[in-house]
Amino acid sequence: MLYYIQQMTHRCLLTIRAHYEEERNMPYGTVAYTTYLKETLALLEDPGLLLVTAGSAGRANAMTIGWATIGVVWGKHVMTVLVRPSRHTYTLIEQSDSFTVCVPRPDMHPAVEYCGEYSGRDGDKLAACNLTVLPSTRVRAPGIDGCPVIYECRIVHKNDVNPTSLAKDITAYPTGNYHRLYYGEILAVRAVPNAAEILGNA
Image 1 (tube, rainbow, N blue to C red):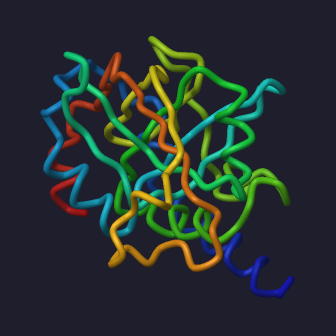
Image 2 (image 1 turned 30 degrees about the vertical axis):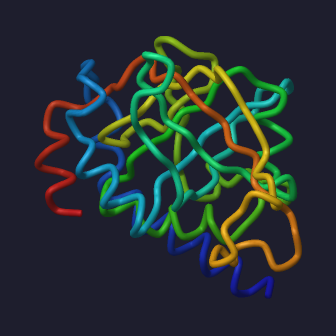
């Protein structure tokens, strides 16, 4: 197992490093929350997006997510993400008032895989994948520098999945561990100038 972890870490570093430096200092602009909605939803399904949180200690952590919704709730543009109580991210997001959702470049897909396989309890996943945090403009939680699109979200509501109201054909909870849903008002969407080109190659 240790050998496999070392190999995954090494692969992350080699794959990302080649393109990362040229993207790191690319300026971000602000776009409408719908600008890259199609690309965001496509990548949400495969390979996933990166949910970034930072707890009271301040260290950021990224978790790969494959489930989320984006729309209008209470007259606000909202992204809703799901986090199980067993996740390290759950502890961090409970200590925070915000989160970011980062859309990865194609060469970041090994990092997305890594962040879905391993827990931040066991080490710094961002460092393992040579990813650097990017301070947000509207929320406390940072983004990931070099991601073409970053959604900055302020938590406005949260609630737990109610198993008694869950349709019988939803079988995602064989052992319980029901998700908590976090509703994040999208306060800003930041994108690099060539995001459409980058995500078009995803």
